[in-house]
Length: 160
Image (cartoon, rainbow, N blue to C red; front, side, top):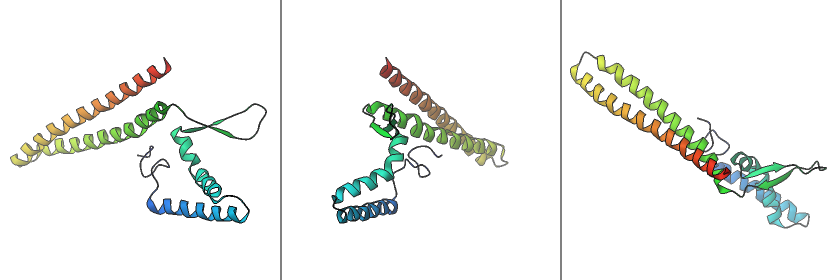
């Protein structure tokens, strides 16, 4: 899975080593700006903002806005928290639930395949596990549906 919030995503929280590297760079830029007569915090903020702007845009917390007659990029912060909440619910959690359903379905197939084993104890155990896994698949699919209904209801109420 490569959606927001997991290790393969730029939206995931940075690992401690990466966070340390970002702060080290921010401190270095801050030191340079002090040398040039600016405040250290200005350099630190500029560096951290430069490194996290893509993440903020991906979350929808910041968006690019165009101003007629200007070529510069301008940014605007999202002030409706529900929009960001919907993005998280609709992508990260949905992706995690979809991945779980696939894993449970794979396990269910394997359990069902064991139901034809020659050993009656293995067959009984496989039947028991298959029944439990089938319920787990069903409940997880229900959670996916509930999440969809919830996000659509919130989204519809927000527009209405």
